[in-house]
Image (cartoon, rainbow, N blue to C red; front, top):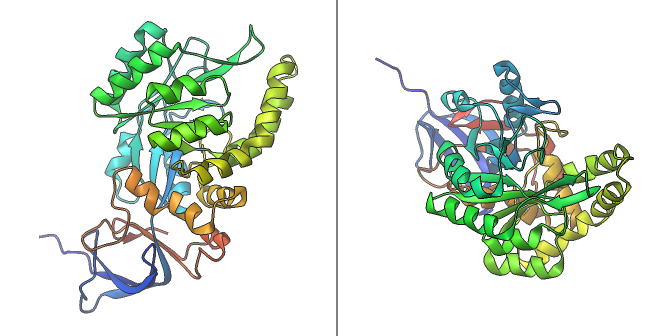
Length: 362
């Protein structure tokens, strides 16, 4: 006969409601009903588990990561930083084994990237022509957990600059295929040129979105199209990408211009009411475990501290289909901090307790 795990207790100011509560962690769930002899394991400011909504467990800067131990290290780095829910934005390897580990983050998957031949990083995506895109979207929807990801633009070496990959009619068919399968569809895009067709095709989200202008920002706000700007990836890596592209001066100059305007794109999108969510793009040129840095970057770009935190916690959890808060019966996924992160987001870099599925994991 299995002995039930003893109940745990955390107490403090619970966000987003900003009220003081004792939370009891029983059977992996939150209870607000007192449990005698529950062990106090954390006290401070209690935040629903953080979210990295653009993450790649199973990728690194060289491509696919087949080594399960390295996949585990990546997931642990995210978890220990407080990111307990990850949206996998495309990997070419099977990481379903993680779902059997109660000590590793929950993952919402998007299958593999879908790209034109030679239109993305080698060996990462499924390469196909426009006439095959809608059908493959259906395949990836079945492989994923309610998301599909396409590569909307990439460097065209003949042009010497970023270029859209898909005609508008293929994008409309892709969005319709995803929605018919009960999935949402998102797209990698850096450039200005690809965005109009993606947004008007009915895509549910844009990744990076550095080329957005005010007209498209307004249209995204009207439609409720989300933006995951992956700002630390842009700020940390676009200059290096440009420096390494000396053979393509137009592309290099374009990337530098996108870098210069990226924070203002985020600010203007937030001001217009576009739903923004935190995503680091960990797994390529960004290391795992940097969710706090992305929340801080969004704040520095112009989001209020609480809005930036919400974009990486309760609002992002609701967007991905999980309970937003820590109410009766909700999953006991939470992070405890020593001080109020709304007053100083830097505290997010130093979680006091990380609790996943009701267990202390960090």
